[in-house]
Length: 150
Image (cartoon, rainbow, N blue to C red; front, side, top):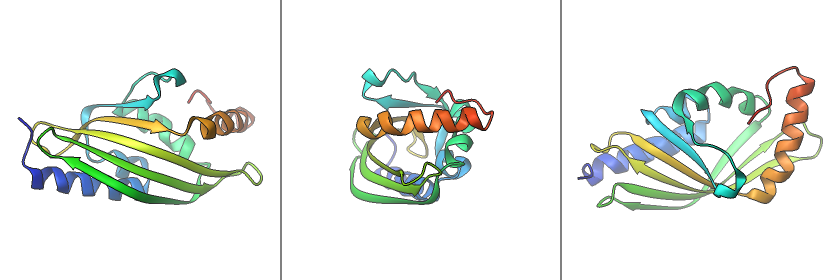
């Protein structure tokens, strides 16, 4: 049985604030230790990631995003099912010439049983954006001598 609606709502608000702050620690602060992040659609072929994997990979990505901003368009919360959905776009400058980070998302959250944490995160991302961004990002990371396996 899902946790109280008020508890879930507070966790949802804290998750969104962490996402807006967008440091590895702030973004994953509400995640359970065994939380998984799944990129959607599945056709992207990105395997689910654990919280420790995300914490390891995220600094590389954040290192190329400057002046990050998150705009939330819609938040839906179904407390009876312990789930929430967020529709948003994030914006940032990148070191890739005039190329800007403009990523549109639908994020689906599943709350822990008590509602105090997020136990599953599913991100439906803008595949057209990712097809353009990730080759630039990988090339940049290789040039910097860093792992580029995002």
